[in-house]
Image (cartoon, rainbow, N blue to C red):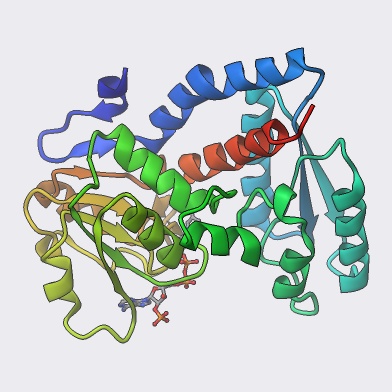
Length: 293
Ligand code: NDP
C-alpha cells in the first residue's frame, strides 16, 4: 500500500524513505532471497571498514541489520587505520576471486594514505554493489543495465513510490558529486525528465530552483535551501545529513519552512538514508541473481 508510505500532512506530504524501504524489504527483497536460497545461493556482502570513524560504524550497523532482515549474509571485515593500501588491494583481490561472495563495498572515508580511486577501481564490476566503478558508472550513463549507485537509485525509487511520474518533469539537482548529483541527474534523464544540474558556480541558483517540479538537494551544507526558494507544488528530496550542534540530525533543506511550500518532501532522518541502505542490499541480491546457476 504505497498510500500508507506517504504521510499526509497539513502542508506537504512526507515521503517516508524508511516506510518505503521497509515495505519493499518485505514485498520484494525477502521473496527474491528465498528464491535464490531455493537454488542453493545465499547472497553474501562484505563491508571493508578501515579505522574507527564513529559515523561509519553506525552506517555499517544499519547495513548489517537490514541485510539480516532480508536474509542475506553481511560481514564486516575490520582493519586498523594503519593498514596499508597494498593489504586492502590484496583483500579485494581475494574477494574478487571468491565465488561465495556476491558484493563488496569499502566504507568511506578511508585514511589519507589509501587511494579511494585505486581501491574502488580494484573491485570487480560484477561485485561492485555501491556502483562506483568506472564500468558501472559508464553503463549507467549509457542507459545500460548495471549495478547503479545506491543513493541515486534510492532517490528515484522513492520518487516513484511517491507516485511522481518523472516523464516530462523538470528536475533540478543541486550538487554535482560523482556519488549523488551526477548519477541521479542521469537516472532522472533516463526517466525522460528534463534535468538541470546546479553547483557552487551556478549563477542565480534561485532562478534555477524556481523551475523545479522535483528538487533534489545534495550540497552537504546544513539547511541551505529554505521554503522561500521552493516553488509551489514542488517535490523535494533532501539528500544531506548533518549532526546538529544541540543534538539531532538535519538535511541540506530547512525542513520547517520547506514543508509549508512543497507538495511533498523527504525528511531527515528517515528519508534518503534508509533508501540508500535498501539499494545496497538490493544490489547484492541482484549481483547474486546474475550468476548463472
Ligand atoms: P559533495 O561535497 O561531494 O558535493 C557537494 C556538491 O554541492 C558539489 O557539487 C558542490 O559544487 C555543490 N555545492 C556546494 N555548495 C554549493 C552552493 N552554495 N550552491 C550550489 N551548489 C553547491 O557532497 P555529496 O554529494 O557527497 O553529499 C551531499 C550531501 O548528501 C552530504 O550532506 C552528504 O552527507 C549527504 N549524503 C547522504 C547520503 C545518504 O545516504 N543519505 C549518501 C551520500 C551523501 P562544486 O562541485 O562546484 O563544488
